[in-house]
Image (cartoon, rainbow, N blue to C red; front, side, top):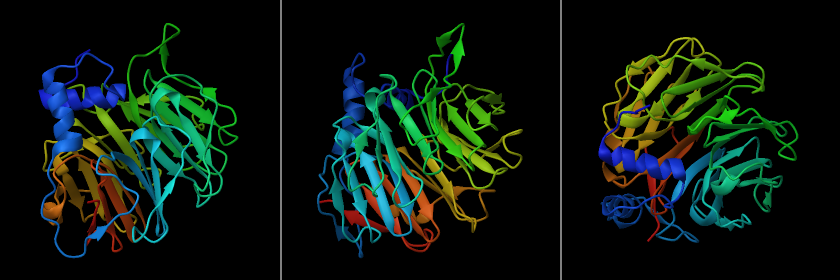
Length: 351
């Protein structure tokens, strides 16, 4: 089964899929890795930038969670950073692992989880002051976690992994996709729940899944695409309206809970890695090469964000909002924050 994508995107997806460079490496892959994650020079930063403490120039930040003025971001070598004042100051939180952490999710200000390489799952009950490792269910790369409430969570990842817990991670139930009794070799990259029972997941081969029973069973939804694409993330604003992003600037939109999906014009051809749309209708999607798309009409249409001209031109891995507050994170310790739903952004300088 062949997915569409140009050579650059295919290499990026290989990194995303395996989570580490333990696959056959060619000079092109090394060059791509350097270009995307380490070697891109910072662009002009303008007034209002702030210098971060505790961050390293080599930090790769894969995900971000925003609750009020609180920001948590996770990344390479198990690093977790937290700010309680929308990025004015930061603290380093010890995760207890050195594996890459690809996603973080908080149900509230106290209860959170993060997942990553080699089946790593960690959780906190005190806002990240302390993190504890949860017993590993498998060695598969875990790409995404959604903490539904203080006890229920869903984790997805490689080999069609889908794990559910109803006791905050003390134990897990395996609902991974299988064929002939064997796990399906596909990455499920994104997951989102609107309540305890209704959730969606997205991943390789244009896969979109939907559950109405809290993850016990999943049905496949038709993405409505002619080609098989790598879909990287999913976001739902309501139980009926949501978006999925992926390779080639793909943005899919549904207004009927995923019964039908419509391909939207994003204005970019880059690999999009995350998307978020606020209750007031302001939306942002981010991806490789500094791609930032925006919507001002509730996600009905998208265009390239003019305000991103001073943003870094390497990859941006995640975007999150909570009311007026929002944050974007990415390669080389990039953190960009807003307190007015993205009308203005403040790029925090790691150097």
